[in-house]
Length: 182
Image 1 (tube, rainbow, N blue to C red):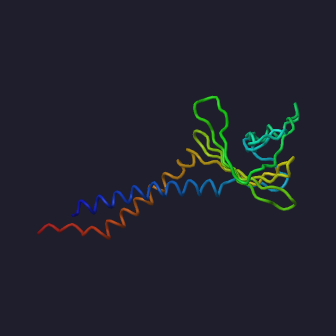
Image 2: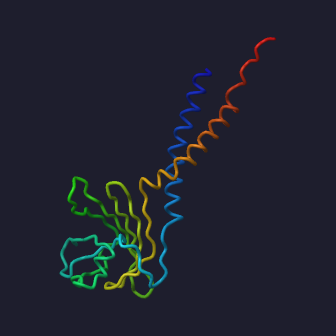
Image 3: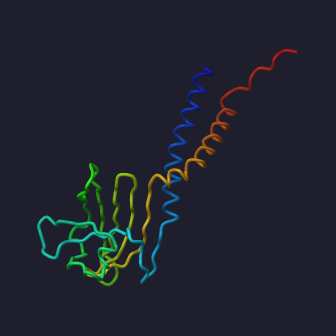
């Protein structure tokens, strides 16, 4: 019976370690996300979803980075930044074997503008971003990246908390060892 209790405690520690590592790493990226007030330039990796100027059915979305949208020389070709669907996803063409995938949702914002939240899943990280557009300009709201560095930051606290949980469970469910006779 003691073996089963010890095995259960180890399993609880393992599950709690994985759950805590995930929650802590996602929480770290959420609380350290870059939030942009009006008029601030975001990081160069900030993603923006665009459509070619000529309408197509179904829409042919493209993922561009902030520098591709704001470059001056040569100026970017005309693009529509207002998305026709309220939610969707598409694959981005890539050079390697892994094809990044983009998911997005849109909602109405003040002044007839559109708020776009997107998630870009690449081979070793996930980018979350949101921006507001009127169809020709973009006002970034937030940007965060979740990846291996986020997980590494979460390993130590998750390990310590799983050890504490194991200690508490052992005290609760395992009887103290019998004292040797004197």
